[in-house]
Image (cartoon, rainbow, N blue to C red; front, side, top):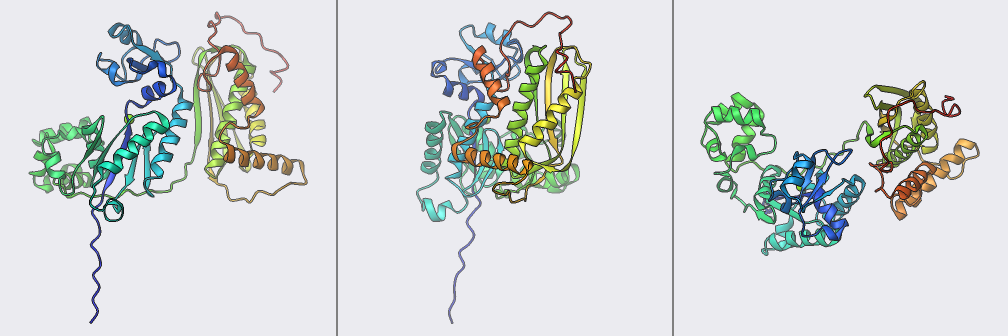
Length: 435
Ligand SMILES: [Mg+2]
């Protein structure tokens, strides 16, 4: 009789990759003169807000997320405050994930600088006894040379374990060997686990559990009673019996929006419109790339005195064409601004009730709408081929010119660093208040 042996399933191996002090590292990657210096990113609107990220050198001075910028300057007078450039962070993040994708077929992004990679089959088919260290360090080196941002990594039997291994490694790489979870976790405090916040930590402490070792030696029923399924998972995890493969769920988003506080209160309503239309083009492009279209859109403006106005529109049919959407957004904007006279503080734009885009765009239409649609499609193809922002809409171009003139970085900080205009009546061109 012929017998075949089915090979045992390999143990689950999950790699967590995380950018080191990501925003600060991006700033250093973009400006080599910052290298080797304490750098923190933040400052808010006027440069005196709070720090949102600080590099390792700055952390030595006690500067971290949440520190006030004036305090950071006092703690470290020779350090550098970098204003945030979110568009560049997004671009660097995309490049970073592109490198990760080439190392695994299953990648689950967790945040702008964090992702989980399924490396379960690697030992059997790729590493073949050579171990993970060389492979993972090659991935880390490739990310650093491609985008200039150092990353740390952790390898374990589940996403929970991999993330803890990364924190233990920072900066560097840490592998929890197969079956080594219980020993690795034993002395670690439970609050290191993502999802174990203040309330759960206090409840566990009340049961006498401070470390994973304490949890492992408790009866599971006690944890189930207090925390339900999460308690059971925690108990299995602490005992090194929790494995969890990386599952990539394809979930469509239902809304997409942008909310920007301008660097200075903007009295020029035309400038506000240019920024809004440029954002509309960016978000529409994003929807197209994700294969989505919108049914509803809204524009919300907050004025210098925090008063807010909002207008929305429901399209008759789901819409994805920038040419159509821009027209509606412009109308909504002027509707929101009707009778307004105060400078603009914040501009918010959103598209909701997103649906899958399943139309097959036609080549050249015979109607006006069809021709506009064909132009939109052609732009999309050019963008896919040559990258984002290869082709600009009029609004994006106008915004860029304005930013170049004032020498400010692109997007997020849409207008030039002018003196905040003194409070007072703002002249509105009647032509522009026509809507
Ligand atoms: Mg990070």
